[in-house]
Image (cartoon, rainbow, N blue to C red):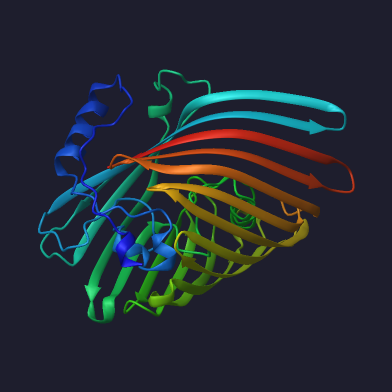
Length: 382
């Protein structure tokens, strides 16, 4: 699998225009300190290296880093996603249609190494896009903390210690919150299907000497909610066979929340595996979720997901996703089925462009909905 790595250099400024002078200065500072990127084809994390190969955060996502050790005391980076979508919903004889084109998210972060290259202090901000905001004024007033943590890495056996506010790794994590498995995971963890800013106060330790890995997480509070008193733990373990391009990993998550009059008990499990045989990649995940709001009701469900990718020309990939669940995305009793077909490609050194057609059908004893999307997403990172 190592031959699919290609070193990419940061060369392009953000494509959007920001009217705020303060924001312009901040972006300029980030670009000055941003390292040369070592970005990978989007599936490499699961089938060759662990998340820390390309991200500062060993749980994946956020600021990217160089493969080699950098001696810079301050560096940073960013991630921008621009979305264009056509949505049609059929329900109970009615049809709704929506066309949206907007700046979906902007993540900006900085890393500081105060006195030793193994100690990292990281802060990342997230700006959530507003579909009606075409000039981004209101979008850049919605800044939230995406993560804020201290990390000691590159310890013996490629181990690390991490503490602060962030999202611990669980399952086959994807930044695409529209996938059925991500919607159900989000609902189980925080009671809604949109988890763009999900983060916890946590402490993590991990060991990943290249092939096997294990990560343990102690969870103390969901930082999204003021009165949350979540306490729990999670772990991930897995291994891969690099010569075969195959991997398998298992994740477990459990936390309880007694804060703000809540009485919640949440449990999740995920088993994921896949293999890469050029030019085809195939993956499978089974996800089990349980959210017991003892003051109200018990919600649970299982999702089976299959993903397939075909590299048909250079860095262009055809994609197929299929998911089937014995509950809706809000973990209501019923059924859900999702199909997605699309094309995804890397343009230049810092752009990832995708075009997808998606259908999501959900059925309960009371109603049935049929949602269809045509989505184009431009992803820019530096």
